[in-house]
Length: 252
Image 1 (cartoon, rainbow, N blue to C red):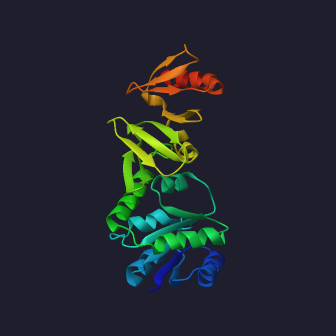
Image 2: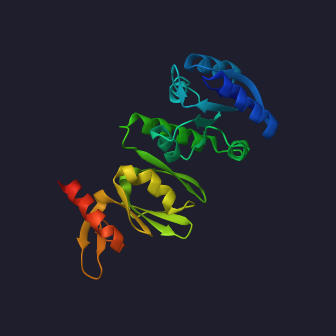
Image 3: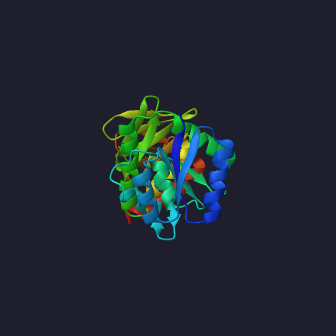
């Protein structure tokens, strides 16, 4: 059974290109309609009831998020498309949702479609979309919640409850202020890129810390950091000066 798809894109050439790519390279997808504006997209989605929408983030009449806000029942998959690596994409990543950068890579498109074709827990997926919309309402520099992909599914975590993250091979352990530890199936670098603007700092190959959860810096024994839960975190020699400068700026 094919997934019924709607493409929301304000540039006609981009709409037609994506439609052609889907028809040529993605099995199990049928494009049933296309829209070029926020209002047209909302009307089309409500009337056609698609299984999946390919949603451009930047539209001349608004944003793709405006489309989602105007639809009461988000009972479809969403794959975002954009020409820019920007704040909005960071919010999408925080929610563990899929996006495609233009020009669209065929393999990435196929992978995103395959993931969409996998039956999801709709309540969890709805929560992911809600997390996205919540984050977008926050100040642009600060995001509220992050969606963590675990072996059992997803966990939604308040960013300010994270004390530090620790590398475990190709996995990451999130240590929270309620003593909970969450093992996530992505490497530490992935979260470093997401959390740097949220007052986090990579102080060691194995540690990414919440600077607001630093309790003490101890110079002896080569230097280490005591976190708010009394865990000790190693700090690389090359990171010490930057760490001290950043902490001094936070204090003042």
